[in-house]
Length: 313
Ligand SMILES: Nc1ncnc2c1ncn2[C@@H]1O[C@H](COP(=O)(O)OP(=O)(O)O)[C@@H](O)[C@H]1O
Ligand SMILES: [Mg+2]
Image (cartoon, rainbow, N blue to C red; front, side, top):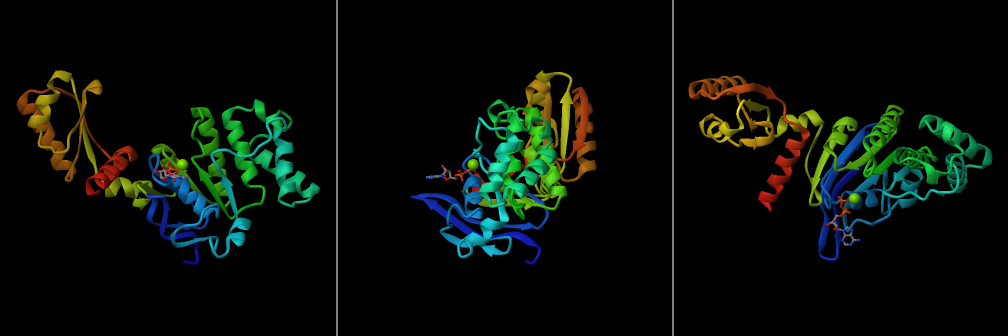
C-alpha cells in the first residue's frame, strides 16, 4: 500500500521454544499514531525490535518507510527513530549538551546540531532546563528528552516502546502532549502500551496483541462497538440484594462489583434491555439508585478479547 508507513505480514519470532511473534499482521498508515496494546509478554518489544532492525524476524514480510527491514536495514535505519525502555543519555550533561552530542553522532555538524537541539528543547518545553544535568530531571522531563533525542534525525517513523511506563500521572500527561504534537507535525508513530487509556487517548488506530498475534484492530470506537456492544449498569440501593437481582434480571454475562453495589452486563437490544431491567426490578421490589446504558470501556473490550483468546487456546 502506497500510504502505508509500516507493513507487517505474518511475522514470526521464536526465542528457543518460546513463540514471541506468532504470525503477526499490521498496517500503519503514514502520518497516523498507531497503538499496539497488549499485556506483559504479548510480544510488543519483540515487534519494535524487528521494526527497528535490531532483530531479524524468523519469517514474514516487514517493511518500514517503504524498505524491507532485513534486505534494506540501513535504509530503514536512516528513516526511523526509536525510544527504547532506556535511552543512552549522559546524566552529568544538560539536555542541550546531550541533544547536541546526539546530533554530532548523527553527523549533523556543529552548527546544525546546535540549531536542532534548540528546536527540540523548545518543542518539548525543555528550553529553560537546557543546562540542568539530566541526572536531576523529573521522570516526565527525562522521557521528553529521550523523545527529543529520538527525533534528532527527523525520522519519518518513530517507535515508542511503552513511553510512559514508570512515570507518575503528571509525567504521563506531559509525554502524551509531546506525542500529540508529533502526530500533529506528520510523523508516523507506532507506540506500544499496556495502558488502555493511553491507547484510547493517543492512537488513531489500535491493534490489540496477545500471545504474539493481533486479536483485534480498529479505532477505539470500532473496538468498543465490535466487542460486546452496549452495556447496562445497575446500581442498587442495598448491596445485599445484588445476588437476588442477578437471578431475576433478564441479562446474561452479568459482572458484579459489590463495593459499588453495581452490576453490569452486555446487551443487544438497548431499549428492550433497559425497560426489561426496570420492570423486573419494580416487580421484585428491588430498589435501584441508577440504571444506565453505556458504551463498553476499552478495559472491557480488552478483557473480552484476551479471555476469548485464552478459551480458544
Ligand atoms: N531474549 C529472549 N529470550 C527468551 N525469551 C524472550 C526473550 N525476549 C522476550 N522473550 C519472551 O518472548 C515473549 C514476548 O516478549 P516481549 O516481546 O518482550 O513482550 P512485551 O514487550 O509485550 O512484554 C515473552 O514471553 C518473553 O518472555
Ligand atoms: Mg516490552
